[in-house]
Length: 379
Image 1 (cartoon, one colour):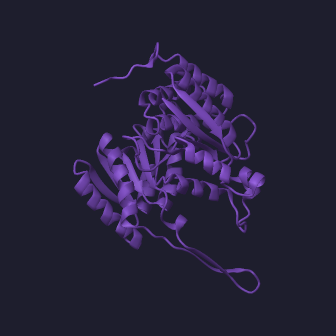
Image 2: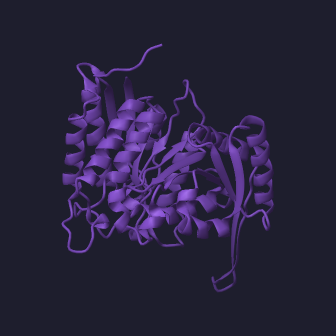
């Protein structure tokens, strides 16, 4: 396997966690006999500082050549002026548009060793294994916006237009249906159909796609407000959840509390398959830039490393290698290594580099590797 990976560290701890993910990918490449090339680019606040743009032309060129993109995080207080016309988050939105990714896939599973780190009763976390599929390119975030001011410059009115088309709903539901079919054949669609016209469209299209294309998958619908409560009170009852952009943004961050820390959760933003089942995607941990700990060497790299595993699986077709990485992260946590965000009071915390080295050591020691990489079944 030969591939070029665009690495966009971004801001804050993004630099530290992407370094960890690249170390892991390089180890996998060496052990598996793959040739991975990493090309770095600027995005977000640091890109604004150096070029005046959140997604510079040079970065766009790198991304367009890449087989996959590994992202750290964007933004921070330095660039948080709400009146600014150029913002770090514009780089992320532009990147998604450039890659034509429309579905954000976020697995949320609870590692038994981290259950005590979650502010939820441990018995509620047993068996939690959810995959969220969030529509990524429509809705309020991309609709027409207005912001009116009076003669003194004070804000008097603002609006955000929420628009969805049947095609946008169809493609993300189709991806969610495929994921559900490969798991426990259960899909929950979350909307606000009792109030919003866009949600009524969402529910109608979702019902049709699942009935026609996935008759073997059980479909249920839930209103976003009730689901937000049930996500905390009965999380083990859910399998695959599909929802629109705004709801998905909020709900997946809420779900992070189940895992004990937002730092351990990965994500993949995917578009249409281009070669078999391979998809050119954007891979990033779901945490932010955490400027308060940036540069201290204590950031949790697990989410970025697990995002790299998703990159191996979805963009490079290296599912076995992805499983090795995931097992290495799980075993490292089981062994007691965890960064400060996951430790109990009084317990020792690992530094970013120590956790990463432990993961790499377990990858190298995996029994999955043969003399020429991982043996693959042939027809």
